[in-house]
Length: 218
Ligand SMILES: [Zn+2]
Ligand SMILES: [Zn+2]
Image (cartoon, rainbow, N blue to C red; front, top):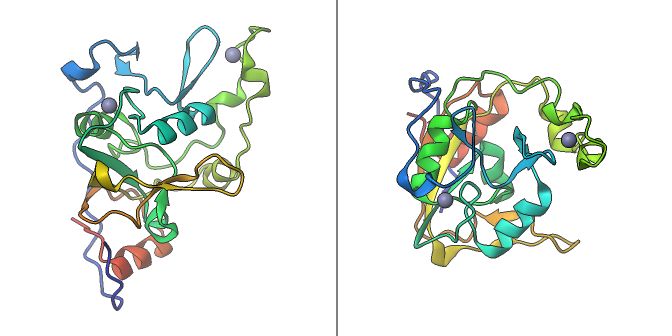
């Protein structure tokens, strides 16, 4: 899918697209739960009373979506074409650890998500899930908010994000030694279409990967 080539110089960082706080909800998502005007992704972590912890995911639901080839936003089965959201390092490791989406769900996510729409320039310094809701029957007191990825990214600059549109016939999971899949493989995609979603605030490593792999940068 991606050719490795010599390092090339990159143009200036493109500016993020115009942010939209509350994009219109497509008809396919009309029945999905919303929170403050935004559709709540199916994989989002929730308190017992249903309050979502936006930006954080329930790992069991992620695994179910990955295995069941379901969309991370609407929880319905993927169809002929699916879309993954990938950061530069995801292309290097060869998989994306979050489930894919329907094309219309991906379009909505890109407008609604503060990271993908370019509204946030930095990751949060502490996860919202670190604040328990006070309901003694809620699982939130035992949520693991110190995953290695969250710890590494806390307070860091926003990543560049790319969308990867691919045929569902190429859908292949990257297995892990412990059973639950690590994510959707990028190495098995035969005819993918990669687009820049947001440049974020790329690190030197990100820029080197983008140049080496020839990822689109405008
Ligand atoms: Zn709770
Ligand atoms: Zn969907």
